[in-house]
Amino acid sequence: MRDHGKTFSLLMSVCFIAATATAAFAQDAGTTTGKCSFQKLNLPAQLANLRTEVDLEALNDVGGILGTYEDADSHFHGFLLYRGKFTTFMFPGSTDTIPSDMNTTGTIVGTFFGKEAQSAFMVHSGGFHEIKIPGFPNVISGATGVNDHGDVVGTFRRTPNVNQGFLLHNGKLTILSFPGAQGGTTPLSINNQGVIVGTYNLTPADPFRGFMWKAGVFSNLNPPDSGGHSQPGKISNAGDAVGTYTSTVDGLQHGFSFDQGKYTKIDVPGLQSTAVAAVNKFDNVLAEAIQGTKIILFKGFCSAVF
Image (cartoon, rainbow, N blue to C red; front, side, top):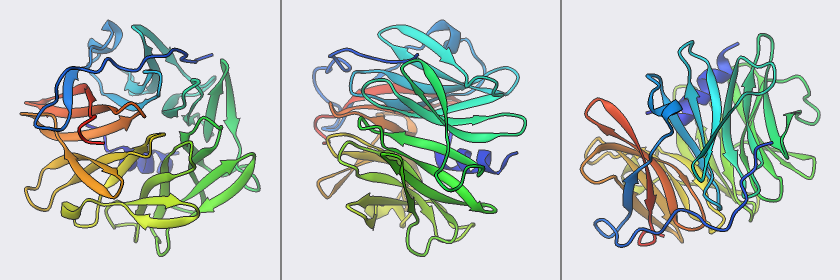
């Protein structure tokens, strides 16, 4: 189960896709323990037969699933799964492509890696485009979130080994840095209302702490039993934030939601170490959980949570 924030930080230190429809996941009847109803996500044969890691990255409001897989040569590829159709993609000329988010119209953002390049990218109307940070055209960067207005969030490096967050709105750059975060700030998702969630580190050795940025103001976003550390990964257009944390009570990894000031723990029943990777405005989520020695991918319906 990939630690998305940790993997992104690690990669930052190294060196015609569109979904349009009217339905999200089917809303399964009933819920489990008053929370979410889960079912295993059926992967296409190309992914199911891989012996390497497959990670879920985003779920948009029309049911498109964005993800990443690692091939036998240890290179990362992006994939889109929509209504049974499976599409893989790579940024042209890259050695590794890691998508991070996708909006309702199918615009995708992420990070690509080449022999001498590491940069944010966008896929829009079938075309791949490198994202340049205004005023910092040659910095190491990565895009992590996009909303339906085309606003993009991500990270870039002005100083060695420290990520700073960015927001691009109508081509204008806003630098995002949580107050006192000497270890870096990583925005991970932005919704249509302009609310951003992500992580920050007080020092380079400090574990991830969650934040929300709303109307220009930062606030902490960590469940009460998290010890002040969590990884919120996505915020929906309905304002629901989801993520993952390790509980100080039982020492286990759990998914969580934050909605209207309330935190709720989200677990796949009977399995260990749930991580919630994505959410859309229809209360659908994507999750990963451990079953024995395997990581199992799930989709869920969580109307009783949000």
